[in-house]
Amino acid sequence: MPSSRPLRADARRNREALLSAARQAFLGGDTDAHVEDIARSAGVAVGTLYRHFETREALIEEVYRKEVDDLCATPGVLLDQYAPEEALRRFLLLLVDHAAVGRGMSSVLESIMATDSPVFDDARTRMANALSLLLEAGSAAGTVRDDVTGSTLLRALGGICGMRATEGWLVEARQITALLFDGLRYGAPQSP
Amino acid sequence: MPSSRPLRADARRNREALLSAARQAFLGGDTDAHVEDIARSAGVAVGTLYRHFETREALIEEVYRKEVDDLCATPGVLLDQYAPEEALRRFLLLLVDHAAVGRGMSSVLESIMATDSPVFDDARTRMANALSLLLEAGSAAGTVRDDVTGSTLLRALGGICGMRATEGWLVEARQITALLFDGLRYGAPQSP
DNA sequence: CACCTAAACGGAGCCGGACTCACCTTATGG
DNA sequence: CCATAAGGTGAGTCCGGCTCCGTTTAGGTG
Figure (tube, rainbow over the protein chains, first blue to last red):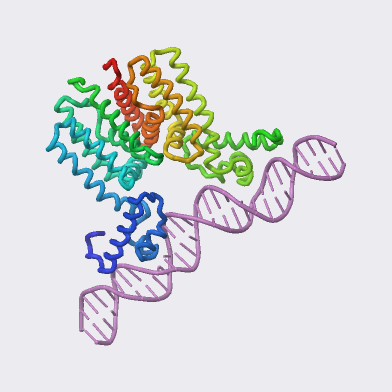
C-alpha cells in the first residue's frame, strides 16, 4: 500500500491525523478508545479511518510500531556502553519504566504478548530478537544462564507489564523484574 | 441473596445447571463463550441467567471460586510435607501445570490478575495470602528472600499464566517459573 | 481553465453480543 | 385448591466495531 501510488495529499494528511489522534488516545492510557471517537478527533468519519486501517487492531499496531522500533534499537546501544549483564539489567528496567510513562508502553507490550494475533507477529519477533542479543552477550560473558530464549523472556515481561492497573504497580513491576534478573543470573556458569 | 429465603426448587436446579454449563464452557477453554449459548445449554433463557448472576463476569467468578478455593488450600498441605523452599517450588509449578490442563486455571489466574475489577478482589486477596504463607515460611527458614510480597508474586504468576496461546507455552511457562523461583532464592540470607 | 476520473470521504445502517423489562408460568404454604 | 410471590421468558435495547454506496475532490490532461 505504501508503494503503488504516492497517496493523495488529503489522504496523507488524514492518515497522519488519524495516527496522531490514535497515538494520543492509546498512549494516553485509554486502551479501549472507540474508533468513532478517534475518527472524530482526527476530524474525519469512521469510513475514512477504515479506508486507511484494515481494522481497529491494525491501527493500534501502527501506532505502536514506532515505539517498538525505538525499543528494539536500545539493546545495541546499551551493549556498547555496559557489560552484558548490566546492559540486560538496564534494559529490563527501562522497559518497565517506559511502561509507566503514560502507561502507553505497557499496553504495547501487553498487546504484543497477550495475543497470538498475527498482527503483532512482527513486533513480537523483533522484540524477542532484541532480547536475544542481550541474553547471548551475557551468556557469552558467562554472567547469564544460557538456557533462556529471548521469546521466553519476552513472555515474562509481557506478563509483568500487563499488570499495570493497581496503585503502586510500578514498585511491584520493578521488583518482579529484579527477581527475573536475579533468576537469569542464578544459573550462570560464574555463579553469584 | 443466599440468605433470606431458601430459593425455590426449580430456581436452585436452574442455577446449578447454569453454573455447570458455564464451568464446562470456561474450563473447557472457551473463555469468551456467549451468555446466550451458556443459557441455552443449561436449558434456560438469558433472562433466567441474569436473574441468578448480576453479569457475565459475575458468573465467571462464581465458576472460578471453587477452583481458587482448592488452590488456596494446597500451600498449607505442601508446607506440612516439604521444606518451605521446596513447598514454594512445588506450588509454583503446580499452578502452571494446573493451568495447562484444559487451560481452565490459566484463565482463572489471568482473569484474577489481569483485571482490577472488584469482582476478583476476593479471589485475588485469598491467592495472595496463600502465596504469602509460603514466602513467609521460606524467609523464616532463611532460604527465600524476604522482600517480596504474596501479591507481587501473584502478579508475576498471573502474567505467566496469561500467556497460554502459542504452541509449547507450557515449556516456556515452566522455565519462567523456574527463573522466578531462582530469583526468589537469590537474595536469601543463606545464598545458594 | 474546464473537464474528467480515480481516489478519498461521509455517515446511515448492519451485525453481533451483553443486558433489560413487561408479561406469563408455577411452586408452595395456608 | 387457590393465592401469590418467586421464577422464567425472549423480544427488544444499547453499544461498539465495521461496511457499503452515494457524494466530493485532488490533480492530471487537452
